[in-house]
Length: 319
Length: 319
Figure 1: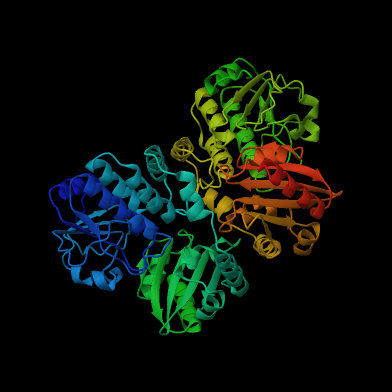
Figure 2: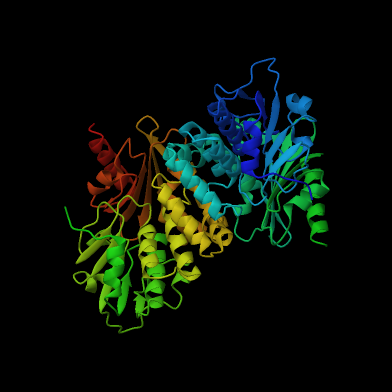
């Protein structure tokens, strides 16, 4: 068992250091981006120099939270912190130079690889944002700007409190962030109750093309390059699309294949974790994640990757 | 200004009475049903005889929570309590005999008509379930069975914490209910992350037929009897359907018309309350509700009611 530190110990460590660079993960989501923004602001408020490393894949859903926080070219960090990064393979290209010099990793993934000198890990948290909130609070009063970023981190990672990872602690942290003074209705409307025409049409196409396996308990859907092109859709329109097919009544495992350029597919598996461990399925395909939500990037066409993931599911189920 | 009592005073009053009959509203939702079930169980735990009046419109989404709680035929109540009923017009047919003898109304609608002897009202609460939780807690420890019913009441009324009515208090109540020992992941999966094939197809048809008005800020969608019949859909498949069209980017007001038998339409209006007061729009059409969410039942065809609601919106907007 690897040695981990508590949020209070992480705050103590951060207080002893300076010149921070914060790293986010490949295909950045609300949790990694919100954590980076919230932690950066908390460190600055504590009198530190702190920046977030530019992540070229950040979508316009989340870029506003990073305004004014990105590291200038040539910034030489004194301390490197990663947020929500579970594995070495999840470092963006421009962050790989820091692979062996991360001072503190803050994470909530059970698949954490312990690449950093110190690791603040709690796999019982719905979002890494819950841990960063505890750290920010230990560093000083949580300002509305910090609270906005951390609310986005937490709420996006638990599907606005609907996913199975949500706990009483998740709700209590949300309540504290709301009390800090965030525009809650606007944030929820923007992130959870607004869909583009393209997104609505994409969902309709995905549902149309969905296939059922294993007596209707496994649904597999594909988002092809052709579908994306015909709708003029971007990665912003596919945010959290992996949870769509798992919604169908009777489905316990929802698999979403996203066809990528270069003959690869990004695979997302969402399961009822009492029925199937999504992390084990994705580990068989070179990926990883949580028991209820995991992913992998797999070489091959949509049909090939579909066959591979169905085989992996049967293997984990012992069939 | 009408006189209202606090949850603590309501609990005190309930403790002094017995032989309870609890009433729910027309077209019962999760809030009215969950409040009735939670309050009934809390009263029984406090040693009282308590029942919920059968509501013929309760869908199978919510009937399980009422198991063992329905009043036997011929039950003569000593005390009548209504939960989440704002107006006399919202009493189901079989509850109208109690119209003038409601002892306590518990409600969170600003349009409350004060039909009861005592009224426990807080229009700042996202759900009536938040008030019933405060009352249940004052009556004794909240059991897991009470907590399940009250969580369903609260979570369904705030769109699983995504709607604009959600507050820090909503999250804190949810955290307390989770601590009481509820199967949170199962409840959320059932109510917020499960859709029937019929529902998914209905959503697709609704989006296809949606029309935009007022420079794209008002979306109007209809659920016709023909659509329902062609899909074999039931009222269970239309639960919370009123929030669908308001999701479209740029739309500030989402209007959903549900064609009913007998030449009437049920109208639901969802708005950004800083842009338009949905309650005022629906009041012009004989209905009522909250600033962000209101409804009415209007005589006429889909086309006639559509014209009427667009006229009402323009009138409230002062055009």
